[in-house]
Length: 297
Image 1 (tube, rainbow, N blue to C red):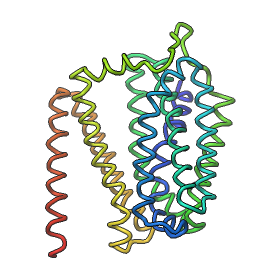
Image 2: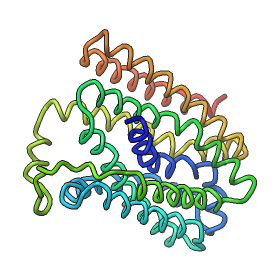
Image 3: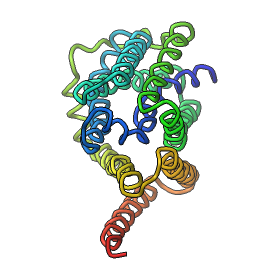
């Protein structure tokens, strides 16, 4: 079962690698594609938007056609998107590549977390989800460093060739080792289950956690989108130096995640959720204060 979980992890990592690996190369990409850095930065929210909305479509497809076929389709799209990004010479082609990658990770993410639900239950499932989510916290710490090293050695296209090779290797492993985990009694879904989505969206409990998660992710997205400009364009850091600075923040995320994993066992979820809102508010206030006072310093 450990091998199965590691295989699912390899699929889950496609999404964060697709974001964090190329962050140090944004100025070089903009220069290479003769575009403003701000325009290239918008490929980050584009990727996340497609990934988020696409999972609403991929979920029914996974139930209808099985986990393994959708995983392979996602990996094929990821390889295509990475190769297109690595060979792009104009920004519209690069945007198309990121859109394809976003569609690809919809498949891999849904398959990975569906696989946990198919094979595991109870504490075993909780440990598997914790392992996968914990690994996702490591990627922001390590991926920019790897991307910075690749960019310094081989140029901005190298991280995308790395993603292409990674997806190709995982694709071979999936063909050989990933079992089909869809239960035999899974009901086929005709079209998008819009009524079910609407019913879920009206649940207060779901909305509370969804908005908390969206707020936290929004803060992360703002940081990810602006960190390169602040630290590299204005701060003068090299891609490798930026990777170390960004990676330090990733390790902090790991430590805080570990703290909350222990806290939630002793305190209620509502208490932890309240702590999240308080820390988010403090972070926003400190950021505003810093941006206000920094120009005068």
